[in-house]
Image 1: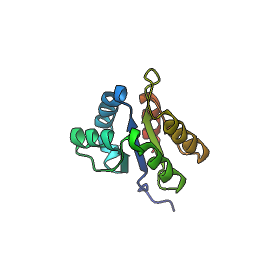
Image 2: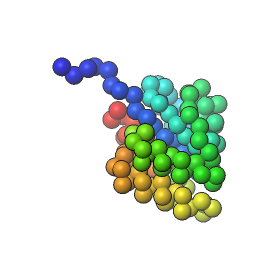
Image 3: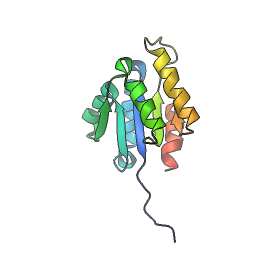
Length: 127
């Protein structure tokens, strides 16, 4: 018989500067679901979400200082189940190779990845 309680997901949250407000609004809308998960994120995004929602988030470095690569390493080690990464396609990023590495690892390890609010909504509703 299958248990009625679902195992919490380990979700990484990342947003580029131009998408941080969208991430905050998304996190606030989904707080009741997110508070039941294990959350991690890059430093700047994570701190903003913590302050706005009170959600506990394990913080890693900010993206330009290696945070994207830290999250990629967690994915490779099987410690992240889902990546919510609102990246800004219209803004050049100094750490673009790290961003590509993160997305490559997420794809290689076949974890659900959302790069837009609508995709994040779909993933979170499927949990």
